[in-house]
Amino acid sequence: MDPSFLVLQALSGLASASSLFVIASGLTIVFGVTRIVNFAHGSFYMLGAYLAVTLVPRLLDLSYSPATFFLGVLLSALLVGLIGVAVEVLLLRRIYRVPELFQLLATFGVVLIVEDLVLKIWGPVDIAGPRAPSLRHGVEILGQRFPAYELVLIAVGPLVLGLLWLLMHRTRFGVLIRAATQDREMVGALGVNQARLFTLTLFLGASLAGLGGALQIPRIPANAHMDLSVITDAFVVTVIGGMGSVPGAFVAALLIGQLQAFGILIFPKVTLVLVFALMAVVLVVKPWGLFGRPEAASGRVMPPEGIPSLRRFRPAEAALAGLAILALLAVPLLGDAYKVKVATEILIFALAAFSLQFLVGVGGLVSFGHAAYFGLGAYAAGLLVTGPFKAPMELALAAAPLAAGIGAALFGYFIVRLSGIYLAMLTLAFGQIVYAVCFQWVEVTGGDNGVVGVWPSPWASGRNTYFYLVAALSLTAIVLLRRVIYAPFGYALRAARDSATRAARKA
Image (tube, rainbow, N blue to C red; front, side, top):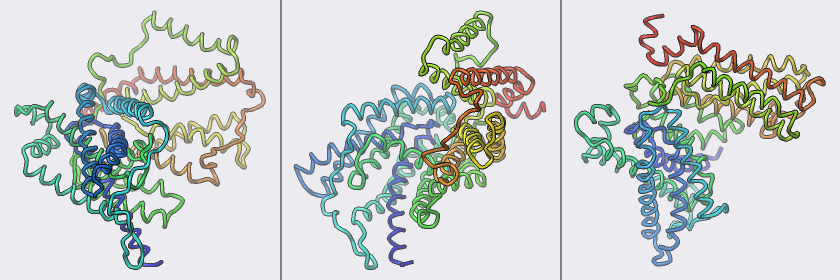
């Protein structure tokens, strides 16, 4: 292979790594101080891009120069920082001590709100940003042309790293950030105004995300889905480097950037797997990331104050639940085909949701990759019915939970060694690996078309019959799970959730 091509590929990886570090550095600082799993960080990145494509062209109309372009980029980042302050004051300040899953859901709500606002203000059409003045040309490197703006991006990452180092080691605010990252409770006990510290930290983190988005406008158009496209990679970088470690995020971004640059050349069919496989390997070998430290907390997942744990139904509640089930079972008798289809999906997703509640609420294991087991069961059943075995539906239904259970046992062997956010992120890694394999192994899974031709046995092929089959299986499984919750095994799970140390002593 041409050496000049390899050099340009490495430079392209460095440019991507530099951009990713700018975004992930804000995420890791915010988590290090607040312990918030901020899924809305990608929204700040998107807002930075949209504000930049709006603000920068107007400034360039006044003065067309590189300084004006980067001034517009910085102003966009600062505006996003102010939006981050508003989000912190209105939402995040109220959820600092709730379980990680609740934080994720709350910040994901912010993602949906911001996405709707973006569509309302800027519309659904992608908006291309201006090219940076005097940086529109290519630079010749080893006989090949490489964009000048990409070289600027390569320099931005180390520059941001250096500025953050000065902030962390030469200012009181930076010292407080480092102290809060190591022991937030002690910082509060020393009389530091934690509310102000958290607000300033959110301003810094959101500004860095906005800066990352604003810097992308010469490369990619601003669009309403760019937040979700970057947040996963930002989480991966943050976790690999070690939550709260800015140098760790820099090293992890370099690894991810080069892996993505060369992975598509070496392993073109598994490019989606590589990043998450790297995160899984790092967390298994070094449970707190490359530069991270063990969490002071045990990673337990307790319900927030005022929200009761799952308990047995009172008579009135049991009666209401019974009436709801009867109403659902009456849908085929009263509704049309569409309502029967929707009711069938309600039963299926109710079982999936209850299984997640069992894992998170009872076991205290926050899983961001629970859908992987849902998918494993679906693919196992579909492939058995349509593959060379041509198995009957009854055998496929029995094999589906077995396949999902085997996958869960395999992943669980590694996952249960961790706790807290690291456990949650490893579940996300395994979930994304399953997704990537299913998406890219087209010969077996059908890729994005999925497994087609799946159909139930003749006796259950009627819509109403199939609905009652789903109802019988789903409701039976839910009832059995509730019985397990109040069995000795369920009480043991809750004991381990509340206090792993005490539960281990009693075992």
